[in-house]
Length: 335
Ligand SMILES: Nc1ncnc2c1ncn2[C@@H]1O[C@H](COP(=O)(O)OP(=O)(O)OP(=O)(O)O)[C@@H](O)[C@H]1O
Image 1 (cartoon, protein in one colour):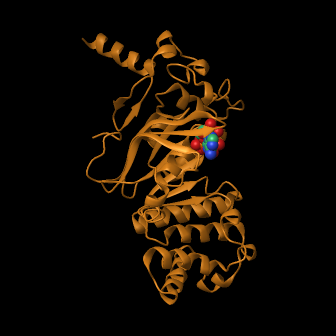
Image 2 (cartoon, protein in one colour; image 1 turned 120 degrees about the vertical axis):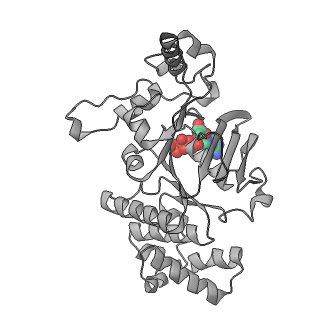
Image 3 (cartoon, rainbow, N blue to C red; image 1 turned 30 degrees about the vertical axis):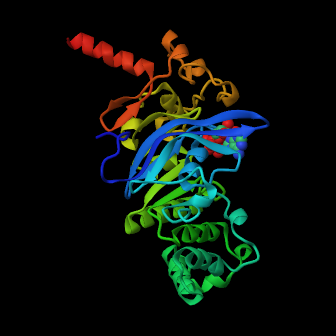
């Protein structure tokens, strides 16, 4: 069983998902044939440079795509049921129920004129059909669950610290008892200590509630700390997917290797960090073949013409012609 082929324990299956944005009369393919499965309680990081399609993937799963987005191909299934992600009205009952999102910058997401307890109680009334009294009791429980004394629920967002506001966002995300939480850079706006506390909270909640977590981040050190698996995206496609331990120890895609080499590592004593040469591609003019080929130090002729398909290894998969060639060489040597 591999990560690309879901087994019975998969709660989420993303199958060939392809999303285009319409922009001033032209169409931009933001994600292309994204396929993966997620098991209950699993924590997966979506990693890649800006514009690689991480947020589009997450918003499609959560049914929160912007109005100019179009799901051109593929589907998302939750517990085996197809979600109507392309249809705003049909998606309404599913939103925040199976999958919830914790965005960065809670101040923008919270309503400044309502007390936070009211904001947490609201989805409980709307989605779970609770009375105001029941919803308020649940909101108090949720506040305690995320480490805020229930009495603080009478505060307005501006009366809370950044870390507490992010905890409120997590409480809201949990309100409708989802199985999957998506954290879209959930700690980016916070200081390092608060960041660590919020990540610890997400980790604790994950094990207490058996939540699956999709963490979108640029920060690979966070991935190493809190995820089991990572998927690396480049120009709208997954290029590598595997366990965090395996990928950090032995990245197979040249892009993954360069991403990992670009993290500062004081322990290594290296003073010069290698940055990835060149810029991420313009998706209006996507490079042919493997989209990474213009920046790849190992590019070969085939990389310019053919989109690499996935090769599966151990618990992972990688889309790279070089990897396939190296494997074929190994087979030839052993023949
Ligand atoms: N609403 C939109 N309309 C048009 N293009 C969009 C829209 N949202 C995203 N895009 C484009 O889609 C591509 C993928 O963007 P997306 O936000 O999914 O990437 P990302 O990896 O999450 O980037 P970041 O790390 O900067 O958030 C980018 O080229 C982006 O400019």
